[in-house]
Image 1: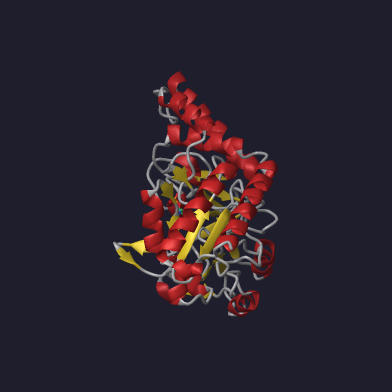
Image 2 (image 1 turned 90 degrees about the vertical axis):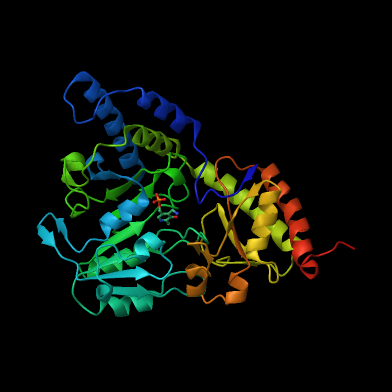
Amino acid sequence: RLYLDHNATAPLRPQARAAMIEALDVAGNPSSVHGDGRRARGIVEGAREALAALCGVKARSVIFTGGATEANALALSPAWHDASGPVYPDRLIMSAVEHPSVRSGGRFPPRQIRTLEVDRDGRVDLDHLDRLLAEGGTPLVSVMAANNETGVIQPLAEIGARVAAVGGLFHVDAVQAAGRLALTPKDWHASAISLSAHKMGGPQGVGALVLSSSAVAPSALLVGGGQEHHRRAGTENVAGIAGFGAAARALADSSAEISRLAGLRALLEHGLRHICSDSIIFGADVERLANTVCFAVPGVPAELALIACDLKGVSLSSGSACSSGKVGVSHVLSAMGVEEDLARCALRLSLGWTSTEADVARFLDLWREVAGRLNPASVHRAA
Ligand code: PMP
């Protein structure tokens, strides 16, 4: 099969698999003081160091969680503390294009939630942010580093500087940015960033909330045992964390890989436009992740195209959110002002460490056939 859905889950990296297999044979509980426990503890702390190095923070700033949904839920807390004592954000400002796990608002009641608009390219409207920040009080602002559907990158340093100027807290869902953008929470003035192992070539079900400084943290979501310095109770997922750490190490120097992906994406986009000259690539005019293409061809419904590709062994995603069996239009594209008919044609291709030029060529051949079948008029025919 051809896998073009790295933003949903990236295939497990061999280094992560090897680290996990080794960790599965360690019997100890990381909280036990005996030798077996200390071995498990060593695995967890080694991974913590790797994650901290990737984000330019101290190891103690990394809180392991059961994935980014949990890391986001932990961050969206109306009770934090910093070096000077408790901080109580009185409202949550989040962008209109956040992942559903942020859009749920975490522990904030709906009346304390404000939605920050984005422009037609999917970037947050900084004037709107200024107006929301002018309301006073202590806001918690949550904006993702890069969007999972479109790959559009947000102006994080500009957002963070504005939030810092009013004494607010800033949370960044950096799940899609890991390995594709430098993770620099300090430059972003971010209080905390969320990461997910399975978007980096690690396993599913493990993630982290990485604090810019261990002095600033949200109140715990899970309490009980004192794990993770009382910030996340529960015996650590040692094998999962081992795989997460190995994936983080594999991303330590990703600039060559980012350029390689940008080259593949350029080939892909050139091919899409050549096959269907009225292809629309969302966010094409702004900075985007090198691995992500969200595009639509009018008159080629995404759901049908997705099934046709799947039948030919190709995995990709549609831009429409599919929850509880009901196909709705993507909230990301709606927030960008994309009309419903066009949004229903949106497909997402996301590349990664397994992707090759041959993959791109195979997809483009298939796309010519699928688009030509679903909407013959859309396809450019060579004379
Ligand atoms: N945030 C973003 C931007 C995502 O793409 C995802 C995964 N779809 C999540 C959060 C949730 O991560 P997890 O699957 O680890 O809960």
